[in-house]
Length: 279
Image (cartoon, rainbow, N blue to C red):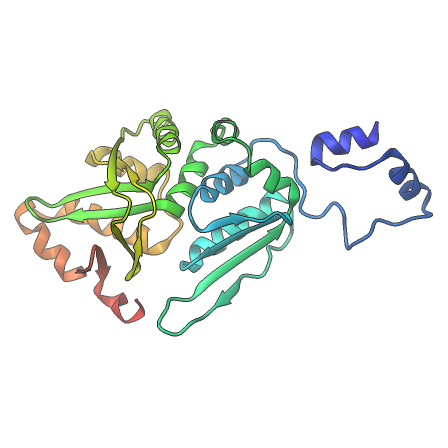
């Protein structure tokens, strides 16, 4: 009975004989703690955030049962780390490691060993979304932290959108439905063709597959996104808040001028003047 319950709750494969030896005390579990980094596979805000973040390019899983996030934003790493600790009911999160290389932004690395979580995250996306949809805002924040962007266009009028780029259209359609459940309209467009160049934080990458973008374009929907979901990443949140503030307080004819006082464009990205030395 105990072995079956452990298997059902924690995805652990233990024989009844092994458990009997532990109970009478003539054997001890090998390793520090066999129950480390296990959780009840029930919906929770932390699990929804982790599932959302896992759909981004920075999160990987290994055959040895390790979930790893490797990103250039420390605040993203900290948020992912705190959610992992909450999922496992840990008092303290793991240490965040930093990898530094010349002429590159530092990479912040979060690692947790949990075969149970790896097994869960490898389920089909539809099953994962069923689990994550209990807390849609947390899933969406994790997903937009990983794949989201804030785009300002000044070619004609001052126009603001929030988007998320991914090559999996099924995933984007599911995220679109979750946005709709909290009253946010969006659309899906083709973003970049396979073989084209994408610039991330000043670095160029060649697209291996065609990507698509989930776009929130209506200003009321963008405002609701900022209220209901937002970003954990400060640079994305700040750009969104700055653009919304300009739209709310500056006459349309002057918005571009005010925006350019705050931001300059480098390749495809708007960067804040005061952070130029850090990029």
